[in-house]
Length: 129
Length: 139
Image (cartoon, rainbow over all chains, first blue to last red; front, side):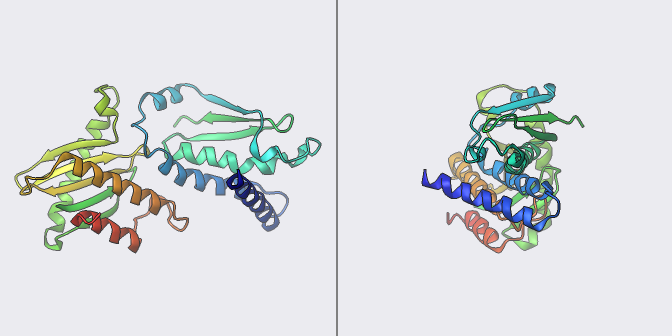
C-alpha cells in the first residue's frame, strides 16, 4: 500500500512539473513521458509471456477498444467537483497505453473520457497502416 | 561457448553485436545475417500451432560445420541470435535457453535506461560487459 502512494506522489509531481514548464496547459509533454515509459515497460512486462500471435491479429480487426475503470487511481483523490482538472491526470496513462501498443507493433490513438469522477474511459483507436 | 551474440531490432537493423574473435568478426556477422531469414520463417503466423512454437525461444536455427546458430525473439520483435562453436559437444539445449533468458533480462534493463533511445545501437559499457560475461559462461 505504501508503494502505491509513493507512485501517486511521483505522478502528481510529474503533472505539476510538466505543466509549470509549459504554457497554456499543454498536455503533450505529459503524454510523451507516458509514451516512452510504456514503450520501455512493455519490454519488461512481456518477458515471461509466450509469443503473441492470435491476440494481435484479432486486435487488428477490431478498430476501437474501450477500457473502463470505475475507480481510476489518479482520480480517486480528487474531489468530483473539479472535473476540469481531470485531463492532466489521465494524459500520462493515455501515453502509457499508446507507447506499449506501439512497441508491440500496433499504431494507435488513445483518448480518455471522464464523465464523472473517479471513473474513466480510455478509447483506443487502432490506426491501420 | 558462444562465439557471437547479436541483438537485431524490429526493422532488422543491428543494435548490438559482440564477437569473441575479432579476426572472424565478418564471418560471424554473415552467420547472424543468414539466421534472420530462418527467424522470419519461424515467426510467420499460421505455419505451426504447436505449443513449442509459441515460445520466445526459437531453438536451433541452422548449423554449419563449425557453428550452431540459435535464435530467440521477444514479443516486441527484437531478435537475439547466439552463434555457438560446434566443437563443444557437451553443450545442452537448456544452457542455451538460460543464456537467452539472461540476455533478455540484460536487454530489458538496458532499454529501461531513460537515456537510451529505442532503436539506436546499444553502446552501454555495463551492458557490453555483462553480455561478454554470458558469452564466456560466467553468468
